[in-house]
Length: 238
Image 1 (tube, rainbow, N blue to C red):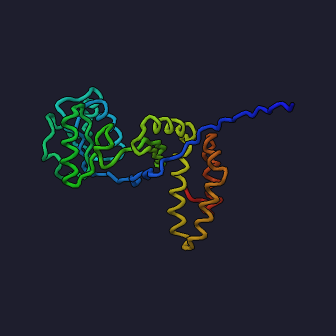
Image 2 (image 1 turned 180 degrees about the vertical axis):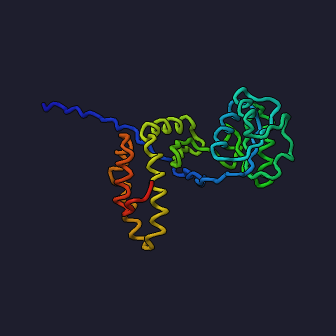
Image 3 (image 1 turned 135 degrees about the vertical axis):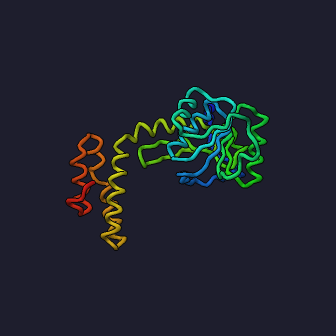
């Protein structure tokens, strides 16, 4: 009698897939020029302190509304770098500002401020509550004028933070110097070379060259000389 062959059932590993009705992210990424623009920050805690520092780096004019301030905020205030209103929020505080950050720890007051801002067509952000905000703030890596933004559309700030930390390892200070050099060369080429196609070829050659490696190794003079050679701008200071 033939022996019955035993068949072995192989379990397939689960396949991850998005739900059929998965909605794409509805956020539109953009960079705002906040120089000399009035921005309101409501709250005086650690979150507010982080917001103020980031906004100051963008040269915004900050009006902070809170009865109390952290020691760090008081130090910045003594430098005269923002306006402080030592009281609770008032509806009139939204006048004259396109942007408001709500950072208080009062979970009853925060949505009220956000709703009022929305009704006035203001851009409002409530810390840690993207559902109450009509814009969110990404994690960022800044190297001079190079700005890399990372966002999970509010789903996981922790993941955005991890990605930021990984990018910080890959993008060092040399990128700050490189962007500065490229910016100066770009202005010079636009003034001297009317043919857009020719300019593009030079720009591509610059970013694919060894200049970044030279900057990374601290050979700044050689990097600038090589940039001038590629761009045909010998003698131009960079």
